[in-house]
Length: 532
Image 1 (spheres, rainbow, N blue to C red):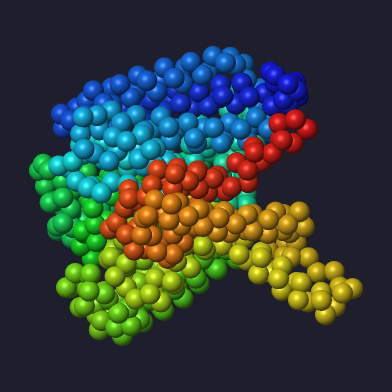
Image 2 (spheres, rainbow, N blue to C red):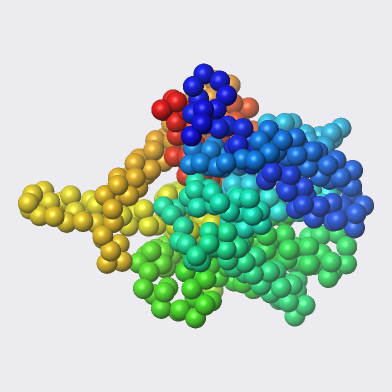
């Protein structure tokens, strides 16, 4: 590889920046969606017109740094990290422009960056204390939803699917960006694999949107008619699209301040299978749709995922049904009616289990009012994560499987030191380098969580902010795991705006590295990456 400009740097950074610019240039296209909504409602038209033009021009300018980029492995790592940072920065434009001259929390650059990063990384944490159409336009709140849908399957994976010039180094780019230990190549060409993944993702999203609107038409979703200004059908259509855009990416943003709690039990039941599907490896979903139903049952990670969701749901449902949830005084009166109600107990248990395990972050109820043991259970669920190759965050189930198996092997070899016992997954031996990589990732993940929580507590003490240890732990776990809601003031009906600026920047960083699974970003901080 040729030297980059300056001081023996062995990374062609211009290549990475130019390709990042190419992605930014095409980000102007999805920005046209809220522009159309702005034209329909007559709000924030100039906001999105300026954002579209500015995004295109910035991307075009960066693209000129290297008109004929040659992508290598190092450039791929840098390009992916820069792309996710750049789209989050550019994503602040609508928030900042719309917030000019208002008391919106998004008028502050750090808040706008936090919200944008939370959207694109599908975290779902928010600094918006007032989520309403009185404060924000329909177009702006739809952009907020759309950022999560774009980030769900991956900005770079989308770029590989639609930009031929990225298909040459597509495998390296997908390895750097895709969630989980690896992504299965479904077709001979990596660009075609990217298209297949996005086709499945878009198809399931469209199905959910249609079903949500059908529920409105048949009278099963009455609340969807009232939350958006306009005719009943227009309001329901807006809500169907808004929530369809944030379920499959396991995002959790909602234009309704009280999340999915605002809707009927039927709507909550409808969203449950889509959250479950979002936590499944999309390669398995593609095989299922291709007529291979046994692929699900034969997959050890899917079986573990289903079992974990089932066990957590049963435990939560039992506690809710028997009154063990100990609903606190801050809850609404009707929460007390959950005890003894099988349907309500099961619905909220399954919903909140999936919302936490898959890191969707939706809320069918203010679980912050539950007892402390139940909140500890939900906190633990944050660390599990979805399947590899899903849109879920967290550590990922397949990694936990490998870690448990490697611990069992260590116990076995301590008794039988001469034995050769490889770690197996689905009957196949796993390469030892992959096992060490999984162990290293999990250790680094926990270190980032631990240091993040400690730094948040220290920063809160610096400014005299009354932040409990549980809130600090939840904030760190929620942001590095791309979960969204936490506990205390960070609960599903709360927000992160009260944190000091350094803490919000730290959590923005945690969301960024969490979405890229930490290692690709940390590699960029080593001197060997740049010079060896």
